[in-house]
Amino acid sequence: MNARLLNWGQSQSGPKWGPINEVGVNWRPTAISKVFDPATDPFCNNRALNPIYFDPISREIAMQAILLEEFGGPEVLAIGEAQTPEPGEHQVLIKVEATTVNRADTIQRLGHYPAPKGESELLGLEVAGTIAALGPGVEGHAIGDRVMSLVGGGGYAEFATAYADHLIPIPQRLSFEQAACVCETYITAYLNVFMLGDIEDGETVLLHGGGGGVNTSGIQICRALTPESRIIVTASAGKLERVAELGAHDVIDYKAQDFAEAVREITAKRGADVILDHIGGKYLAGNLKALAVGGRLVIIGLMGGAKAEINLGALMVKRQQVIGSVLRSRSVAEKTGIVAQFANAVMPLFEQGAIEPLIHAVLPLAEAAEAHRMMEASEHFGKIVLVP
Ligand SMILES: NC(=O)c1ccc[n+]([C@@H]2O[C@H](COP(=O)([O-])OP(=O)(O)OC[C@H]3O[C@@H](n4cnc5c(N)ncnc54)[C@H](OP(=O)(O)O)[C@@H]3O)[C@@H](O)[C@H]2O)c1
Image 1: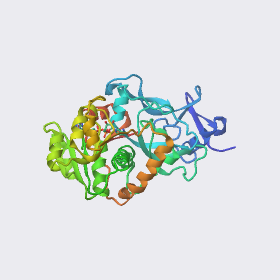
Image 2: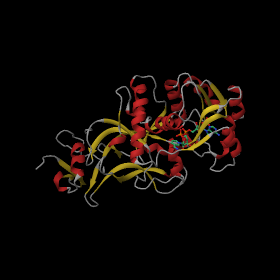
Image 3: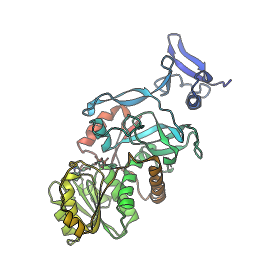
Image 4: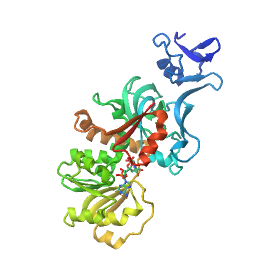
């Protein structure tokens, strides 16, 4: 019999221990035995220090997570206990060391962006941590590996599952907090400006909202991968200076200026070849006016509404393309392809220290409500990180 014991919870006479093979659920002994090992970990029976807790009544393993029991403002987010997920086929269980807040989380919290079918209902789209358990069929990864990954949901927790094919090894020079910032926003910027927007070096790009997560990432990778491109960025007045320091060649105060006119002036009426937009309806006409002949407008968000009217005649004559794109609900196979291309093109920049994730604040996971408030008040420049 395996000598390692599993904590069966506290009783009045102290912690009870049972042999791990009494758990009777195939994957769990492997996962737990890595975390619960009284021989090497004197704190393993202490709930405050060891997050995995096996409830002998429900026979579930609980972890701390941010729960969303109703939709509403940031105050609906509270720390509580959820069942630790099980890694399915070709998945791993990650001990989350850091996750981040993305705008989509705030929309999910409001009840307008449900988790895709089959994904965790918990918030959180990206994690960094170590592999705690391997699901069936996983090869080429080992327990303890430092990894970061996109997740379809479930990042705001002590443990999350991810597909092995979506894992990216964390470069040595990045901390868990920095690594947690890479997957959602840099992959979004790379997918939409490079893979779908098909930018070529020397072309002009317009990025909206340059102080946010996606577009601070966008500025950095455009500077690094298309050094001859002109980068035009919109932002609110208080963020313009930092956006320029980050690498934007031209900045536009979107609250005080007509951005389409400003882009036409900057480009001598030619317009931008690629526009990455997350405002949607409210900006559609302006974006098409600011787009060059043959330009590509990629829409990834609807902060300014989902509906608008456009002149299709002008679209035809100017041979413009309007492309809609989402990352989260794509198939596992599609994400695998995107992650592989991203890792190949962008990860060397992190490994060499050519770019670094921009962290606005690091908060304990329990303060997720404060982190959402910060994002919705647009106080941040770069990413807000949560640490379980
Ligand atoms: N489709 C996808 O796959 C995908 C993936 C990731 C993200 N997204 C979307 O991308 C957007 C950004 O996400 P995020 O996580 O980076 O959020 P974020 O950090 O909150 O950034 C949002 C930015 O939008 C800017 N903004 C607000 N109103 C604006 C306007 N009228 N004109 C120009 N900029 C404006 C804000 O700028 P100021 O603070 O300067 O006001 C802020 O910097 C969200 O809509 C999100 O849903 C889509």
